[in-house]
Amino acid sequence: MSVMVVRKKVTRKWEKLPGRNTFCCDGRVMMARQKGIFYLTLFLILGTCTLFFAFECRYLAVQLSPAIPVFAAMLFLFSMATLLRTSFSDPGVIPRALPDEAAFIEMEIEATNGAVPQGQRPPPRIKNFQINNQIVKLKYCYTCKIFRPPRASHCSICDNCVERFDHHCPWVGNCVGKRNYRYFYLFILSLSLLTIYVFAFNIVYVALKSLKIGFLETLKETPGTVLEVLICFFTLWSVVGLTGFHTFLVALNQTTNEDIKGSWTGKNRVQNPYSHGNIVKNCCEVLCGPLPPSVLDRRGILPLEESGSRPPSTQETSSSLLPQSPAPTEHLSPNEMPEDTSTPEEMPPPEPPEPPQEVTEAEK
Image (cartoon, rainbow, N blue to C red; front, top):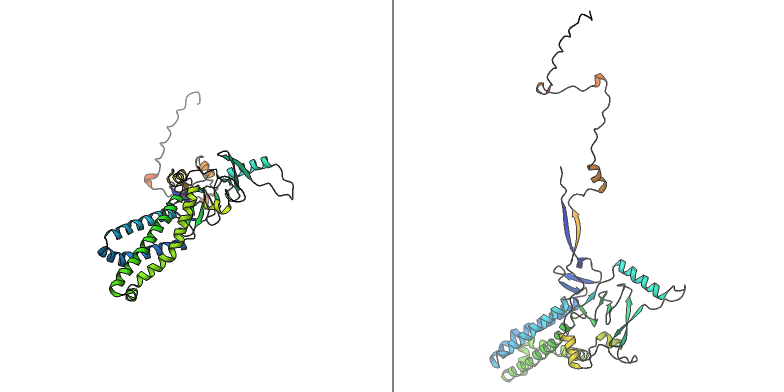
């Protein structure tokens, strides 16, 4: 009796998720597919800080204070931690509708809008939602087959709808949304402080060395310092400006996407329903509010059967349970009968002869 061994292959949900994201570490790390600029960000931060710790910090710790490299290390570690947290986390991707759910939504839309005459454009698929006594429109996403929640938008690069979508940042290699915006803001804030810190103490280092050997000789002996000053100088304006812009958005409880579209300003003249009218409350909600869990369930299990031998079908299983009939034999002639090859031990014993019957007088 043969035993069929069936092995189950565990498939994680991230392996089947649509969109243009990439996953690492068994779904724990989630990023966009375009990661080249993210690697450039890592190279600039690591390269500049490595040169600073290798040359300037040793001299400044002896000449001025040992606290200089300690504070620089704290800023560096905090910047790297927030960068990796922003880049490797789920920004708030909204799962796409299942086929049954999409069909149900289509039925609802058709029942609401009615039959559209041929040649006419169908009405826009919009639902009205009230927030703080103000009507907000929920738009339908034709890719994800869902009505997007308020402040959500579809990222054309990652091909996913992201909750409270701010923007797609190639420098961090990920979308910036509801679940990683605070880490993005802390990253650009700490990076601004780190850039100012490294730039300022590079100038101090050059000034101290110039007092001893002259300015030109200092530049000749420390080409790494010149490279650091150039990198920090051109990075400083963009990073500090970006930090100031997002500080303004946090104070108003607004996103970059809403600011670009002019959702609450400009021609619309609609008041922002998400603002509390207080800078402190807005900052606390955006940066200190509860972080919602991911709704993707990336590491959920999808069991799929993968057997080493083919499992029996229903027809084969039912036929195996039926009694087996003997195979038909062909009629052979006496000359074609097979020889008996059984041994004497296997031959049955001969039957004893019947006793002779007695004849009665009547029969005679």
